[in-house]
Image (cartoon, rainbow, N blue to C red; front, side):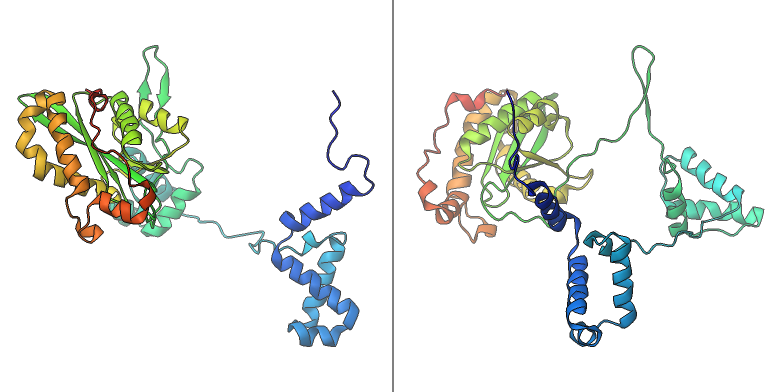
Length: 356
């Protein structure tokens, strides 16, 4: 089968397409302005151009020379880097550089300001000038490997693997939810009951404060995955972003489910609970108002969940919230979008208790 592109055998189509792509993506707005100034100069003369655009004579000649050297193409008028071809290099005594590297290896990934404090006795003894913290930071940045150390893992077959930190998507610093389902936050409450570990998975919609929870005896990612599927049935809006901490229950199966649904999974920074403040506040509320009075029933998650559902119905349907101007989450959602208020939320069938 023969495939023909658009504009096949149209005379000049390729040239026009190339010009359009260059104009749209390869030429900056400043270069386009320079091109208009040069065209105005050619048509109206030097004095009129200087008066109209406020540019100097030597600037016009310089722009024209740039355009000529570029073969008459406007890309030649794009701004170029003004960095000097030859720049100064940071040069310190070899002993100072070696000592910085030794400190970074002996104390893996130690910060530059702390290295500066540990470097003072060495420099005084050897009579070297001591660099400051910001200078040490630049010295570290200049190193090809950034003087960074990674822990090493030895596999069962003797292979040595460097364990590098996994890059994860983080919630933007100034993110603010603007509508229901914009961001859903999840977390886990861990309890010891008569020597047994039990977990309560929790969920909060950041915008409407609609919350849900489920007790389980498993801390695996499969349980978190099942909990998320229940949330999708209970919460009447489609979630766009999912925010969790770095717990193992939110990895593997849970993360694979989010990827399958094309959801963006945000992680909080370690030891930074304020990044998930709304969910942490719900965790405190549900513990102070319900779990502390029913923790003995956590030994049997199904019995605990039956009573928990009654509390959540009251929490979402009737309990006033200061953040919602003393409205409940369902009242707030009804006010936000009345056509989606006719949901039978009291349907607490046994399918909710499968993650145990």
